[in-house]
Image 1: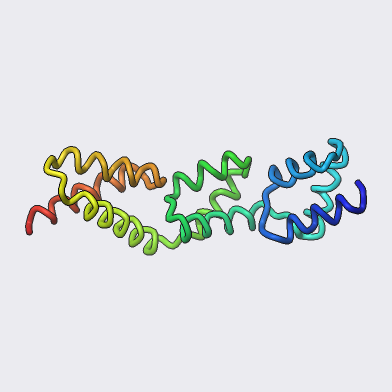
Image 2 (image 1 turned 180 degrees about the vertical axis):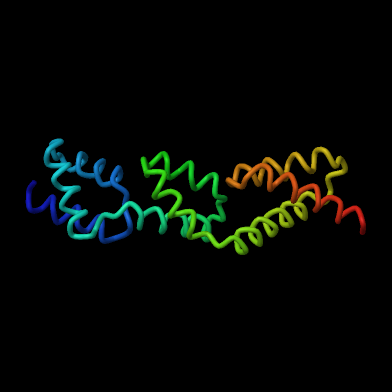
Length: 156
C-alpha cells in the first residue's frame, strides 16, 4: 500500500469511528487491491484505529441521542454495516433503559399533540404507531404505551 494511501486511511479512521466495511470500501475507492485492503485493515486493527465493538457502541449512542432512533432501527443499520451480533449487543447495551423509555414517551406525546385535531381514535393510533415504529421502537412496547396514552387522554 502506498504511503499516501496509508496516510489517507489513517486520517479517515481518526476523524470518527469506522466499521470494517466502511474502511474496506474506502480502500477500494483509493485504488487498493484485495490483499492490500486486507493488510490495511489488519494494520489498523493492530494499532487500535479500527475496532468494531467500539464502533457499534459509538454508533448506537449517537443515533439514539441525536436522531432518537429505537433499538430495532439501530440494530438493522448495524447489520447493514456487517457488524457481528456480539458487537450489536454490546452497542445496544450503551442505551440506558430509563432514558429509552423517557424518549419514547416524549416522542409519542409530541406526535399526539401534533395530531390533536384528529377525530378518529383509530386513525390517531395508526399514525402515531407508524411514526414510532419507523423510528425503530419495538412494536409490542409501542402498542402497550399507545393504548395507555389514549386511555389517559380520554380521562380529561
